[in-house]
Image 1 (cartoon, rainbow, N blue to C red):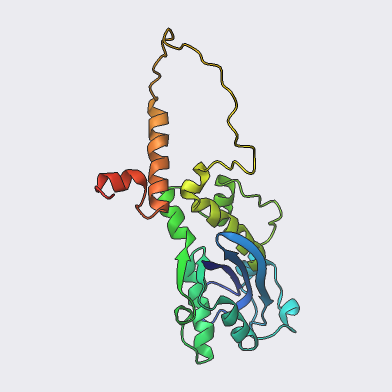
Image 2: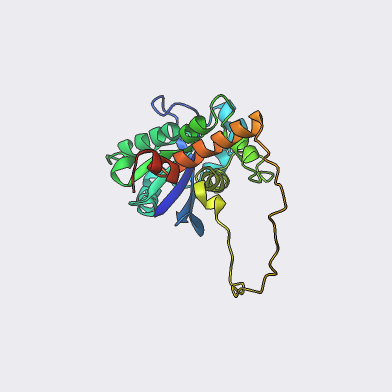
Length: 237
């Protein structure tokens, strides 16, 4: 499956109020691995950024003055994303801005060019209800290094989100053991009489039980309800 992790920076918070996109960053995942292919473009938004937005991304009007307008890069952007699944953190925000830019050009909305949109913020809220689920918080929780992130930047944030997404959706992959190319020949094992041993039964504590159930819930969600125990419960062979 081809997936595109996407992020934008904007002049403000309101696409319908006239704010514009000033940076787009996309990275490509193929079979859940970063390929190194990316799309990155600064854009002349034809207006100044709001003060609050400028503090977030630090991209000045002067820097953007000689950059191409969205109309000039739209086709290249859409070609990069064509038929892929698009993954965005807080998708409604970015998609709203992209759709408004496409509308200005007389083009249909983003959904007409891609296979679908996944919102990692919605995923995180289901996995970690009641917790902070910003990109920074998820990086910290999932041990994704974000020390290079001083200001928000579309390409850098897309790269961080790609790693966060892989960790969020790793599911049962995390349980696999990589045996590599090691010699699988069976060595002689001395026989021992274990009949005299009495093995103690150690029951899980309350915290361990809660953690175990939480892990099972995450694995079940990541697999779309297709885990072995779910199939057993539904009598699926």
